Image (cartoon, rainbow, N blue to C red; front, top):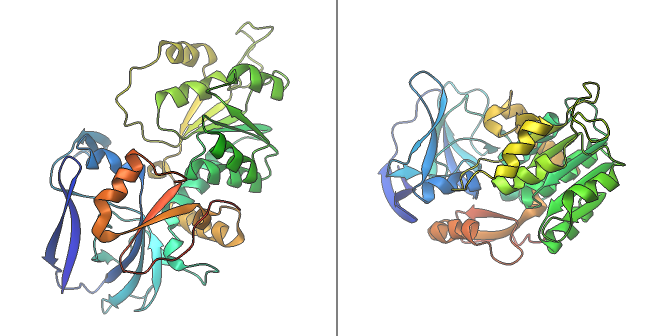
Length: 358
């Protein structure tokens, strides 16, 4: 049996390579890919910048891209065949979860891969990309390690909006959404933000000071992937102070949860360096790679999709065919109007599900 795999052969160049699949092992699954989410984490490979890997010593590392390379880690598929000793799945099961090199028509994976059988869904199963919803579970858990009265989210794209919805579902009442797009801030209000601030037009620090009665934020999620976004988060986080002086040890420090992978070529802002030293926030990485139980988070993410607490399926505003994958990655570089989240479909039909309102 053959599979067609999308391969990055050069900077921003994708080619399709037909390959023979190996014989199915006794503990393996043959998966037919139905849809895969487009994710900014794959952009550095597409751009020929760098990739993330594991060193020989077992450490995560950033290294130069080695062409050819593959993409995709937000799969939704159907089990076509199982090895003779597989017990968790059977042919016909629809699955989601997390594995690499997902932009391929068929894929053989071990039974113990971080995937699971999808439950009955009230929407098109191809929209059920569990991995980003699981990321939101991990992000919200990181935010709420201690009681949170005032929370914030910098960046109101699909992940930011889902995080706002997740924080609201967890019972956080004061959520400050920060962005430079009025349209996205309007969506943030719909998804549960109690206050919105356009950081391109307003004094972010002064506004948050007013909204929190001078307390600033207990926890804030930075999800833009830019140092400017991290600087915005640092400027509004709670920090030890007394009448403006930074020497009161009894005021707890706030927590900045970084959910992005910082891939842009940026100069480190001097003001950010100063604020990191003076405010001394707790920095907590909540990228899925740091999650304690990725598979469990993905399952909880799907449950939250079904209940509407984390409406990942409604964030999917754009769909594109596998044969046009290169164009889909250009959406990530220059999003079309109204773009929040895109998926790649592997057949000629579209789900018809569009829109971004709850």
